[in-house]
Length: 96
Image 1 (cartoon, helix red, strand yellow):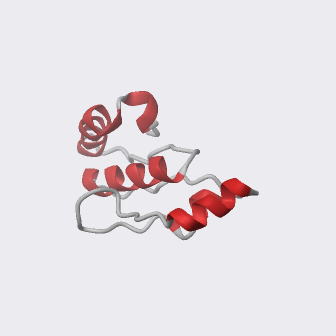
Image 2 (cartoon, helix red, strand yellow; image 1 turned 45 degrees about the vertical axis):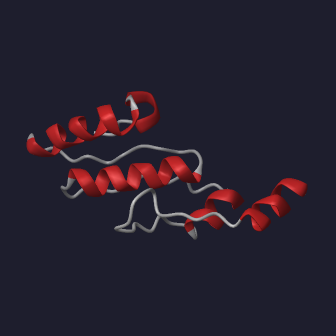
């Protein structure tokens, strides 16, 4: 099952759905093919849901996503999504 967090109501709606998917013996593989914040959110939702699913990540070049996530999401145990964007680097991208 591949619900898209942005289309299914964020964490509030997607996490309970993902947990039901896993409890039913199905595989939850979040589908999100856009920016870095959504990908990190989907990765956290996947981790919270449990199971053996994988995160679908867009393979097209995305400089902002690659700068913020290092190319692939890295989950942290602290509050939030685990990114501290470097504003100077982002300003350089927007200046181009």
